[in-house]
View 1 (cartoon, rainbow, N blue to C red):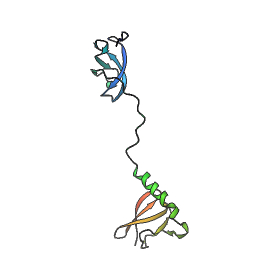
View 2 (cartoon, rainbow, N blue to C red):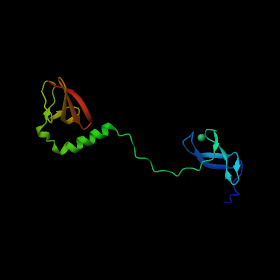
View 3 (cartoon, helix red, strand yellow):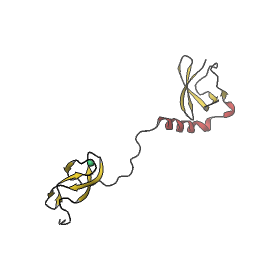
View 4 (spheres, helix red, strand yellow):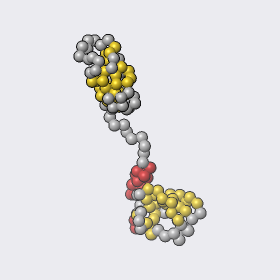
Length: 134
Ligand SMILES: [Zn+2]
């Protein structure tokens, strides 16, 4: 492969492992027709030339926001909730699992678990919350 246009001192785009991205480099040494060592203009690191990696599509976010998961859970349950049957939340009520609660701040919620003495876990649109109860 002839590549007569490249020579020492030329700018070239390459992959920098320190910057972890494609950056502008300057050719330091030539290895016959291809760049040998290059210097990253961003971090000044000299390293063997690596061709730039193809632009990848933004990776699907691996970190799932637990709040978002809970919101979706709530939305999936929403059709089963009848607001007319929701009892206004009070700390002096004994709740059972699956009881529907109407909270002044969080809105409609479903009791999902009794987590301890006088504590229930309620799924609201805003996420899962531990509430006091009787
Ligand atoms: Zn770099």
